[in-house]
Amino acid sequence: MTDVEIVEVGPRDGLQNEPRLIPTPHKTALVDALAVAGFRRIEAASFVSPRRVPQMEDGAAVLAAIRRPERTGFVALVPNLRGYEAAHAARVDEIAVFTAASEGFAKANLNCTIAESLDRLAPVVRAAHGDGLPVRGYVSVVTDCPFDGPTAPSAVGRVAAALRDMGCDEISLGETLGRGTPERVEAMLRAVLEELSPDRLAGHFHDTGGRALDNVEVALQHGLRIFDASIAGLGGCPFAPGAAGNVATEALHDRLVALGYHTGLDPVALARAATFARSLREP
Ligand SMILES: CC(C)(COP(=O)([O-])OP(=O)([O-])OC[C@H]1O[C@@H](n2cnc3c(N)ncnc32)[C@H](O)[C@@H]1OP(=O)([O-])[O-])[C@@H](O)C(=O)NCCC(=O)NCCSC(=O)C[C@@](C)(O)CC(=O)[O-]
Image (tube, rainbow, N blue to C red; front, top):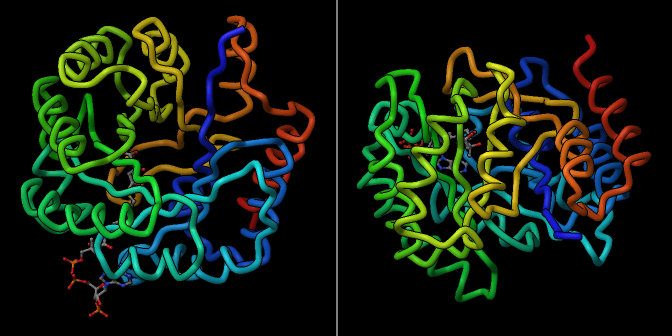
């Protein structure tokens, strides 16, 4: 059976969009419940401006309190060297840096151009590698941008190649708005695969239009074997108006198993974590 890795991003990409501030112990409990399910990687926090994303302000406290089973690596999202230093001090196992394939989204999310974001990220990648940490690089808005409209596949290929050239070990292709169709995802993947081999890529599909699982299948057909997902479909992006959460981890797991792939995850523990995740959204 072929292995497919699901990278759990709910504690970061999912919770960052929750309007009500979730107490730190509840975030920690969610990460612990997810770790029981057997993930190899959980994106547990981000170290960004607390003014821009107040929900993520307690990232260091979350990382200090979680259990750390040996099989699970904990990832944090960082926008700059300051974020990297905080994440490293919080003993992350991997970092994720992020940019976009459109200027409109780079401006809204990072307050800079794509080129400026790449300049800002290069020293972060060097510092992480110097400390022995792997780096994943996100490209957002790979099919559609809420500000600039449809994204040209060639633009995604260019930014993914720039992240690779900078040293990112893996590139996660963010379908941020969740409105991409399998046809448009396929066109985007063809452009990216001219630059990178599929084993360096991850698919990151939001599910606003209900096509995320179909988009995963297209990516599987093109050789991708790593997918990001968010438990209970939590989330959205505070800087992408109208975007829903990532594809739900438990739905992705079930689809992958039905297709004959092996995820290494425990479905009972996943269901428990999903129930707990849903309870965090209740007032
Ligand atoms: C990128 C910046 C930092 C640029 O920041 P800036 O807006 O250009 O301004 P700045 O550099 O002057 O910093 C603004 C404030 O943040 C502080 N600051 C600056 N850096 C840090 C830091 N690391 N940690 C803590 N604080 C920080 C800094 O000290 C200052 O504090 P103030 O003077 O306002 O009190 C800012 O715009 C920002 O944090 N943006 C938020 C980005 C974000 O978290 N977006 C959501 C995650 S991305 C996403 O969800 C998409 C993804 C990855 O999932 C894939 C997909 O689906 O597409």
